[in-house]
Amino acid sequence: MSRRPCFAGTALAAAATLFLAACTPGTEASDDVAPSGQEAKGSIEFWHFFTDREAKAIDDAIAQFSDAHPDIDVRVTAGQDDAKMLQAISSGKGPDVGLSYSTDIVGKFCSSGAWRDLTPYIERDEIDLEQFPATVRSYTSYHDRRCAMPFLADVYGLYYNKTLLAQAGYTEPPKTMTELADMAKKLTKRAPDGTIEVAGYVPLLNFYEHTPQHIVPGWDAKWLTADEKSAIGTDPQWQAMLKWHKDLVDWYGYDNLQKFTAGLGDEWSADNAFHKGKLAMSVDGEYRVAFLTDQAPDVDFGTAPLPVADDQADRYGAGFVTGNVAGISANSKNPEASWALIEYLTTETGSIVGLSNAIKNVPTTSDALASPDLQVDEKFKVFLDIFEHPETSTTPPNASGPKYVEMAQEYVDGYLSGANKDLASGLADLDTRIDQALDLGR
Image 1: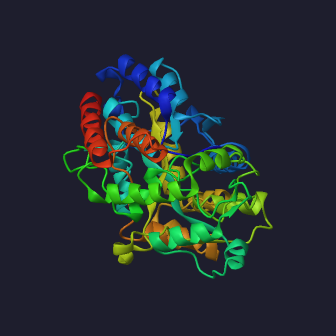
Image 2: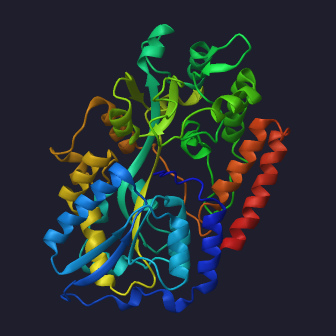
Image 3: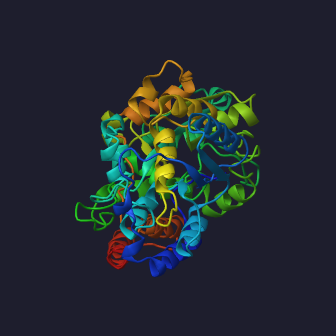
C-alpha cells in the first residue's frame, strides 16, 4: 500500500538497468498513434500499486469507464510496483497502461522510452494542459517529452495529536522550525531509564514519511541546478536543515530513536505510531486523513502546513507535492484504447472527484478542485491549500530517475547517525558523486 515515491531502492534500479539494456529506439512507439477518428476498442491490461480499500476505489472507477466505453475490456492487476512494471516491459510483457506512485521515475520513463510520448494524443484530442498546475505539469514530463499524465496528487503536511498538544499546554501547531523543536521536546515522554515512550516529533529522515524530499520545501533548499547538476553542497539551506535535525537527534539520542522507531507499527497498518498516540506530530500525506478515519476514529487530530525555517516565515503554507502518474508502456499492443483509459482517469472531472473522495488524494485539475461534489472538510482543505500555494514544489525530473534522491538519503542517514562528521565537505563530496551518477544516467 506504500505510495512513498522517494526510494524505489535496488529493485527499481535493477529493473531500470534491465529495461535500458533491452530497450532500443524502436520501442519508442510515439509515431504510430492511431489517426483521428479511429475507434478505441479491444482489450488492455492496467497495472496499479493500490491495495485493499484503495484498490476497491480503482475498481469502481474502471467499472465506470467500462460503462462509458463498452468496446474496451480492461484487465486490472493491483499491487504492482515500478520495479515489477519495468521488469515486465523489458521482457516484452507487462501492462498496456501503468500507474506509478513515483514522479521521480518520470525522467527515466520519458528519456528511456519505457513509456510512450503522449504529446501526439494530447495535441490530437486538444487536451488543455493549463488545467493542471505548473508543478504537476513539471513532474509529468522531461525536457520536451511528456510521457505521463497526472492521476491524483499527494501533498505533505503536518499531523498533530490535539489531545497530546493540549496536555502540554498548546492550542496551535508549530509554524517555524524553532517552534517545532521546542514543542517536540516538551511533548516527548520518557521512561525513568530514558527510553522514549511518546515522541513529540521524530527527527530521523528515514522514518515513515519523514524524508528529505518532504522536508526540503520548509527550508527552500534546492536539489539540482538549471543544468541538472547537484545543488546540495552549494546551497546553504541544506546545511541549515541538516544541522537542525542533527541537534534534535542528539537531544533524543540516536540510539534511543533507533530503539523507539524499531518498536513502532507498520506505517500502512492500523498500528501506525500516530494512530496509537506514540507520535504527537508527524509528517504525512493527505491520504492519512482517510486512514485515520478508517483505522483510528477516536484520535483527535489536526492538520497544518509543515513548519518553515525561521527566516522564511513568509513561505509558511507551502509544501511538497508529488503524485501518481499514468503512462502507456513502450510495447503496448493497444495504445489507442490505452490512451482512452488514461484520458478518462486523468481529465474526466467525475472520475477524478470520485477517486479523490474515495482515496482522499488531491485532485489535479482545476475543474475537479472546484467541483461542488468534492468532499472537503477542514482537515483535507489544508492539503488543497498547500497544493495551490505558489511556493509549493516537487523534486525536479532527471534521466537517472530517483538516483540523486537516493544518494542524498544515504548521506543524510549517515550524517544523522554520527557516521559523517564534516557536513560541509560531506555535502561537497555528495555533489561530486551525484554529478557522476547523473552523467551516467543520461
